[in-house]
Length: 102
Image (cartoon, rainbow, N blue to C red):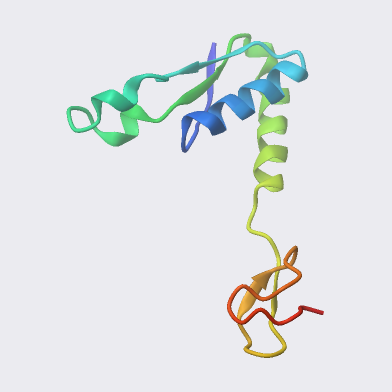
């Protein structure tokens, strides 16, 4: 059994767990209930961890993790033509002034 990663939160750990399961990789989430210990233990000890059960699956699991991280990277931005505010590329209207983004 090998630790694949620490997730920033429990939903993220389970999203990754399900991606691994879809690829036929057996994995588990540890520290699911450690959030209740915050204040008594260091916060990094309470992060959910995803572990791959079979050592032979680690390389494929790391490739899935890399793909997951790429898909959740910071989106491209574009400036508003009216106010210059940076908006995510998926926006059609500026979040600041409401102008149409071209």
